[in-house]
Image (cartoon, rainbow, N blue to C red; front, side, top):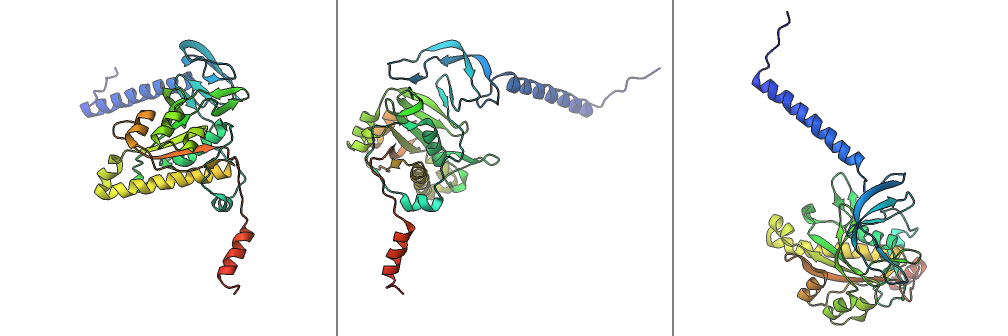
Length: 310
């Protein structure tokens, strides 16, 4: 006769833990592979989801409404919209401009053509400002003291300000950038550039740019680690992020300018910033009316003249 071995309480608890862990892992795998993944794969994914059925505007007026529908995500589609979330084209190399050239050509440009940004251009601008560049450690494109990451990024999109595909535009409104998903979440509907310009002391480039970034900061994320000195670290970080926007805009053939003159509370209300989020920059981005590209030969000649030709 076989005898049934009795497990010690500690051993039994350990076995039970393993069983529960295995079950949870199997359930998690079912959730992940049995439901549509936002970034998709190489095949067409069809799923029944609650979504905004008209996520874009075209030359005709359209509205958004929440309904249950079946949405097909094509393998060729670089973006898609689920509910109030816009999943942006993923970051990739889209420019042949070198970092040396981007630094040389960077300028504050305030006059823009009446043309939209593409969604890919907006995607790369946002990634340069706050996107993930080291997935393992979740480090971002701009350096941050102690990786405390106090910055929060909003995007004010004008009417026909961002082109999705021929004849289709991203809905005008205020969006919040989701760093981890590289996505935009609709915060407020409508073209708010005019109101943002008024809050920015009526600076016309804020109104005229197809897109305005609003960079805010939660100071406590950094000051709780570094105390009062953390305040200056936050300002430094905002400058790092803004310079990244400048350089990426330059590489993409776009123009931008950082704006620091505005009514803080008014700007915060325009983008519906949280109570702990303080606006630091308003950054218009658009297609410039005029671009001048100095050459390194010009720089060489100038420096040589300053050295007396010696």
